Length: 239
Image 1 (tube, rainbow, N blue to C red):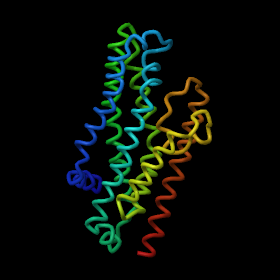
Image 2 (image 1 turned 45 degrees about the horizontal axis):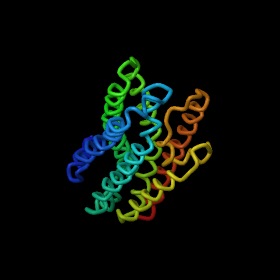
Image 3 (image 1 turned 90 degrees about the vertical axis):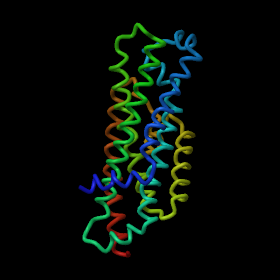
Image 4 (image 1 turned 30 degrees about the vertical axis):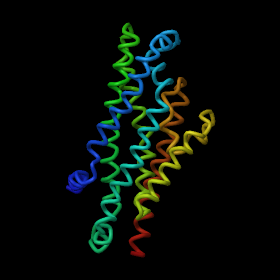
C-alpha cells in the first residue's frame, strides 16, 4: 500500500515526463552518433553493441546519473517541503520503510529509462550493422548489466537526499559525486567501485572481472542498506 502512496506522490514532482524525456535524450546519443559517424563505426572491430557502448555509454551513463541525482532530491523535497517527515516521526511507522519504497520506485524509473536506451542502441546497431543477428540479445544483456550497476548509486543518492533538508545541498553533493566519478581512472578496480563510478562501466570482456564487480556491488548494497537503517534509527531517537 505504501508503495502505491509513493507512486501517487510522484504526480506532484513532474518525474514521469523526466523519466521518458531522460530516456529519450540518452537514447538519441547513439542514434545521432551513428548517423554522423557511420563510416567510422563500420571500420571498427568487434560486435555492434560493443562498438556502440564504447563510443556512447560514457555520455549516456552521465545523463542517467544526473537523472538519479535530481530525482532523488525531488522525491525527498516533497517530504521536507510539506513537513511530512516530522509528522511521520510521531507515528508508529518506520521512516526506513518509506526510504526503501522510494528506492524501489526510483529503480523502476531507471529500468524504464534503460529500456528506452536499449531500444535506441538496438536501433542504432541495426542501422549501422544490419547483418548482426545478436543485436537484441546483446542490447538486453548490456542494459541489464547497466541497470544492476546503477543501483548502488540510486541507494546512496537517496540516502544523501534523506539526510539533507535543503534540496540544493543534496543536489550539489550528487552533482559533485557524478563529476568526481568521471575523473576517476577506469583501470583502477578499487576506485571504480565508487557507487557513482560503477554505472560508467560496460560489460567487461573477462568473465572473472564481471564476477568481481557483481560481488563488490552486492557488498555495497548491503553496506548501503545497513547505513540507511542505522541512520533512520538514530535520527528518530533525536527527532
